[in-house]
Length: 260
Ligand code: COA
Image (cartoon, rainbow, N blue to C red):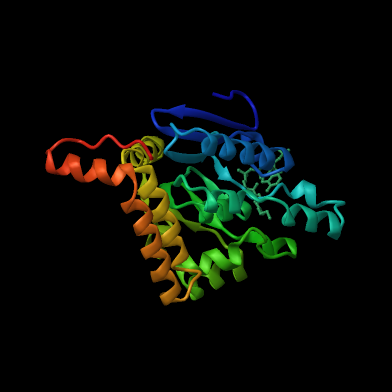
């Protein structure tokens, strides 16, 4: 368990809870947060006991209110380019074989929205507010927003958010398919952890393969995607988890998956 830093992480059951902890700055992503977040994801990946991840923001105001705007001041284009070319929190989440659930508990703006878009499942508190306000600053989304948002909500809804910079509430986000569930603020984290624990109870081999195959659907032509699905199916079929899962079903007992 890590405590008190700008990104805290702790293992609860088989789930790692990652909390971005800069509430006085609405959990804005500065260099320190980004680097600590990458370390937290690496820690989850390195720990076989962690089978799901929940990401949330500290406090009751924000999930993440975007990139730290203060860091833009005085930064050269080349410096900014280096930041964006390096390992990003968005790719780290998307490529993490362990599923990542966003528990969006307040403002979810700019890079915060892009972080949520990179997650596999998004839950929102009824008070959450979503937006891509970059045009207000004379920039565009740079953490994947122009690419991932239209893939999730469709081109029209994505353009409306990105071109106007206006925020939408949790109910509108649910209507658009931007979030998967809306909960009362007090119930959000418990629901996210329960969902994570459901995923954690499945075969980690199958879950990782399912994430990779399903995400590939948006990147690959159908024939290539179907080939990848078949290859990953075969990988699962050869696993101890498949043998255990099938045996447990036939013996009418709960499966004990080992991830092998
Ligand atoms: N970067 C840096 N600091 C930020 C920030 C960001 N993205 N978002 C909020 N903060 C800081 C504020 O500057 C303020 O700092 P201060 O107390 O030292 O003055 C503190 O967080 C609280 O913000 P405040 O605006 O007073 O809170 P609020 O609850 O009234 O409003 C927001 C919250 C998120 C609506 C508002 O802060 C905002 O619009 N932030 C910028 C969002 C944005 O454009 N993100 C995209 C960046 S590319």
